[in-house]
Length: 92
Image (cartoon, rainbow, N blue to C red; front, side, top):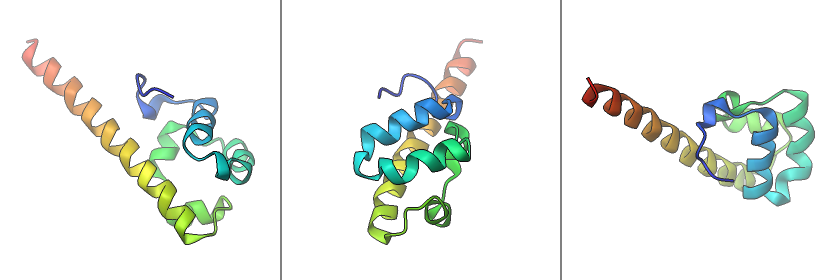
């Protein structure tokens, strides 16, 4: 899944697509939880390790793998936001 759209505006379906692309082995565990809790992109960016445990990802190494992916998403989101701010500043 490309990151052409801001993660914070992802729908539940787009979150499911990202999880499927990045963590297909965890999809069975996460699919129902993402739908049940309506985890959008905005909520995805806020997930912490204890949230993953509540969603059914109990193994610490699996949590760490997903948390690393979430960190990359957060960084990408911040870069996009800074880029938008800079482009607005220089277009004035």
